[in-house]
Image 1 (cartoon, rainbow, N blue to C red):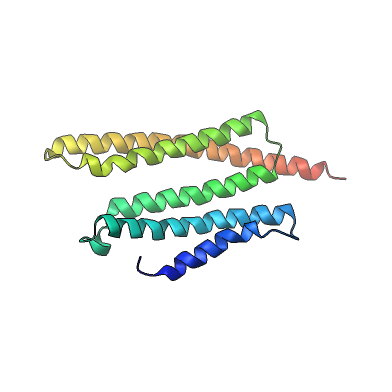
Image 2 (tube, helix red, strand yellow):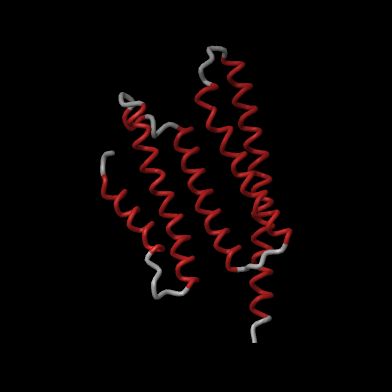
Length: 173
């Protein structure tokens, strides 16, 4: 690992929600959501470390390839969005059955978006460029369909969270 300082800072920020004594539950949950976002930065550091460990002769050039950069940053931004939606779902509880279904459909669709991208490196082992193009097209099509399902479920979930928060606010005395 080239620089341990960001790693140590990220670990300290991840420990903040655990020291929740004297704070309200909402503050602890908000700190936990921020910690998930900080975990995304930790993921970038860990991925860079693992790439340099498994491919030591590649150096930083491996990290700068299109697929690694887009794949890793897409995963990490999805993780941050899912953490914020989980916080919103917790604040708007109790969730209806439809919101719970939308939440789990979103999680499964995000997984279905990310998992095929992990096989792109294995697919490039062939010398046949036409077969490679067909396989990459199939993987990207599967990821595109799954991300459209995830987007639809996330929009439904955001709508249901907003409706739940508005109803909760109206019911307060």
